[in-house]
Length: 207
Image (cartoon, rainbow, N blue to C red):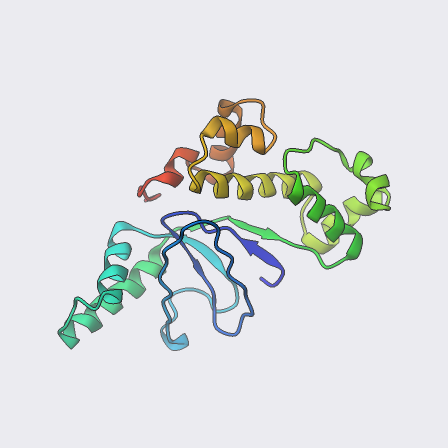
């Protein structure tokens, strides 16, 4: 979806269909592989991006193909076919953060991204942004098809995923994104994504 920021934590991948303009931003030391799939063989929809699980088998296939350790052409074709099938079956994760175009709503979202721990309500943001709380609530609904509270939770998840991936202790992550303690943050995280935050720093999959 245009105007969306996708968070790609460790052991996950982002699917970007052909023809979608995008920018990749990496923080810290990062090693990644880019795979190019013919549209005719596309394992996932061609009209939207997605963040997917990278299974141990998918990871090994990518490494083997990238390092060119499969010399026999027939085996390479079989490995590539299996890799496409693994991508097709990979569970997706709701890690997209929609970004608005409307000037006032974009100003609010940028301010919240600067301080995801802020507990400001829409009524408190309104005089800062220069629009009424009712107008801002309407813009969230019409521009982003979500609510202020849901968007803020998704923002906090996105920031938390980034910080966990960089090795920050869970208690510090909870504070950074506005939660009083690690258990409260972990509960929100598990309720939102279906797995605990500790799983982001391991090679576990959701299957």
